[in-house]
Image (cartoon, rainbow, N blue to C red; front, side, top):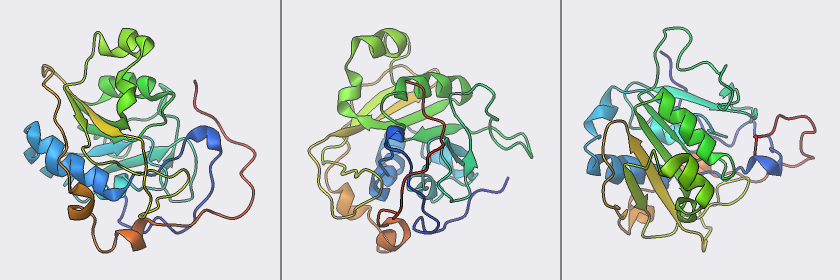
Length: 236
């Protein structure tokens, strides 16, 4: 298995259509999952040899951080080609190849920041493919009759972990200096585990888990030029 390398996401950037809801994840928010949420669930040791898959990896803002923790490497994929060398495929298409076609390895963890509208479909499919699923979504995602009836009623998350501090996300790029009024949480499912009480991700993560080279590796400016005219859009 050959995981994607640690490379700056600034290179070869391509602008996706707005319909793909591309909001890159601040690196520290992914590290908070690995250093606070997974240890709270007793999963920290499992990451040492496990493989992960981010099926909405965009330019790699989350996936490249996950490779800092997962000893088994993993795969990044997205429906849009951002020019970063990740696999281009629709996660919601049942024909999508799972894991590494070369060696038949499947991921133990599926972790992503999926587009908001098809997020429930992302979760339902991910739950059939990996024993541990973690999705970064707005806290408001826990509401809604349709999501309750199609997901939460029969498959509630093992852990709902909201951030105490806000996680700023900017459309189309990561802005290290941004602020936001929107709140986010990690929704985690562990196969066979009963739901637990909410876990609040403690304050101070933004400062403590931001590394000196994150700005160089992950910050970029919006790409110049028109949007591409021909893409496959997420199903509503």
